[in-house]
Length: 192
Image 1 (cartoon, rainbow, N blue to C red):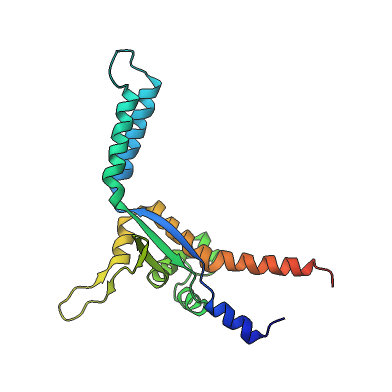
Image 2 (cartoon, rainbow, N blue to C red; image 1 turned 90 degrees about the horizontal axis):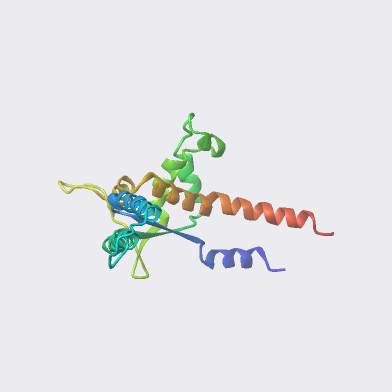
């Protein structure tokens, strides 16, 4: 069995777990796609018997493919890493429970506020396979503040913000708790 120092050193040097989330910066894309999907379903349900080079479903599918090509640049990949425990605890301590939010009452802090604060500390954008930090610069001497995280959060959909919250929560709360519980369970059932 290795010493505490050896185990601590190994844990410090180990890569932190990560999660990736893809979001879109084009809010209209999902609306356009939904409209085209509905049009495609309608075209499939009511086939046109006229002779034509392409069927109605094929024409709609071409529009969907074109939309996907045009909007590929709007997709942004974000990568989040597990935070050090002391940083995570500090953020959760600064975000009190919203009494009317059951998820907050369950965990003892404002889940949304915690994740908004944690994202710049543990998140990056992935561009051409490389990690790129989002810019966060406070205002100074007539120069306006830049907060790409805040801008991103006001641009993406609620569903996408939920994906970000899920990734950060899983990395910093759910997975560590599950790992410890599983190890304790396995040790409890192990013969002496």
